[in-house]
Amino acid sequence: MLKHGRPYPGKKSWTMRYLRWLQEQHFDHPAHKIALQEMVEAVRTARERVERLETVIAEFVPN
Image (cartoon, rainbow, N blue to C red; front, side, top):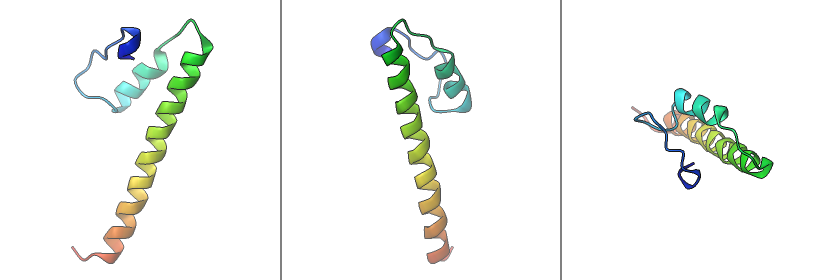
């Protein structure tokens, strides 16, 4: 987004508010929107993976 001159006006990134802000962005070229969607999906997939790993680790490691 910074390369397009669109800094996020909030303080923290990757919050629900930030994700909504990303979804509201419009581009002249469709490839830019596709690239943004792919990056957001990659972050979502990584978050899900971390959650799964944390669950498994919690099962094997005592508190």
